[in-house]
Amino acid sequence: MWTQIETHISQITNNEFEILQKKSVSGGSINESYAVSDGQYTYFVKLNQASQIDMFQAEALGLQQIFDTATIRVPKALCSGIAENSCYLVLEWLEMGRGNAKSWEIMGRKLAAMHKVTNKKGFGWYVNNTIGSTPQVNTLTANWAEFYTQHRMKFQLRRAKSKGGRFPQAEELLAAIPELLAGHKPQPSLVHGDLWGGNAGFTVERQPVIFDPAIYYGDREVDIAMTELFGGFPPEFYRGYSEVFPLNSGYDFRKTLYNLYHVVNHFNLFGSSYEFQANQMISQLLR
Figure 1 (cartoon, rainbow, N blue to C red):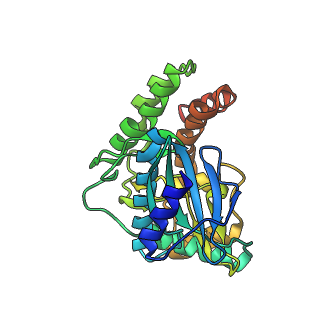
Figure 2: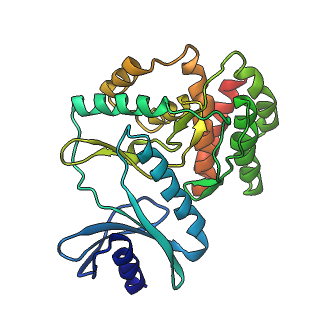
């Protein structure tokens, strides 16, 4: 398997590459991740079952689309493929460091710039991708409330029900979403889609980087909401963002609706410990 990955890297870079060092590195709970080096060049390699190749291909497309905006840095995707029983994705290796107040403010500004990239065809994307390992349907839809109801909350709640989840107010919530979003007319912004603290960081030069995207064109507030879900980003991030692209009124209510998508997805990925939290959020929204 590694020989095939070496060959693919050599072809893409037009430079003979032989793995002399390989070490397991942190890369989330979904994939195996490695740093591979020939002593001169280092690359980040993700591995999963061969059946997950579409997930890696969509991730590569998402990274490229963010890269093409020239707004915020992402690791470059070099190549992907199937080797034996595994699929792989090879990314640029970035030496990561720590941010300071100024670099967090710059991250906010750069994310705001990315969110100003829009799509005239509506909400969604031209391919489906994944959120974690859960399929994410991105059928282009003109109306945001319809898109969020059908392709985000309905999809996740039906999947959760099939896994034994008990969400007694689920249908009531789905029926209420158009009203909950009434009067809110966001533009279809390019969003990261899975922007929690583990998917954002800084290079050793303190340059902001985001990675592991689940991109689509949606309400930009979905990204800001998720930054608040697991502890929140520093105040400088939100200050930098607001200076470039201030949030609309009503965000504090909508962020609960948008984060519900991720909490139900965590139920689908990791189990029943998220069921109570999701039901609390649904009740809060329906008060």
